[in-house]
Amino acid sequence: MKEEDIEILGKRIAQIAEAFRSSTSQIEALLNQTKGQLGILFYLNEHPEGTSSGELAEVMHVGTGRIGNALKAMQQRGTINRRIDPDDNRRIIVTITDYGRQLITARRREFIDSMGYVLDAVGYDKLSAMLDTLEEIARVQDQYLKKSTKRSM
Image (cartoon, rainbow, N blue to C red):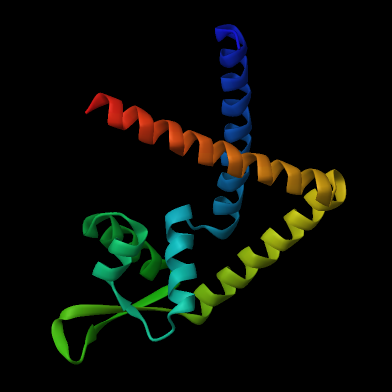
């Protein structure tokens, strides 16, 4: 394949990625939560007993400072509660509030509605074929990166 063809494909991929980022930003604005904060809410929703901020940082693959900032903003919005662990005064337990659960329910509903719209417009077979292709691209890219990394060592 010619280098200019590869560059054209790269530009198309960048345009598609930007379109997805734009729709994600609209959803974040609608729910007044960042993507990371939504991820925290989804995790807490699956762990109703709560979890520590350190565990959240580990699960979300970010530093404790970043988690702390997100949790502060989320607590101010009323989506989470933080309390001292009765068994260990040094540890903070984070739990989701009813309002946080409402946001998760709204996000799931939005996802189902938008995917239903996409399925109706594009069709299941085309969408499924696209996802198969994306999985194959990710697998091949991963293989390339593994080979490339070995060569540079």
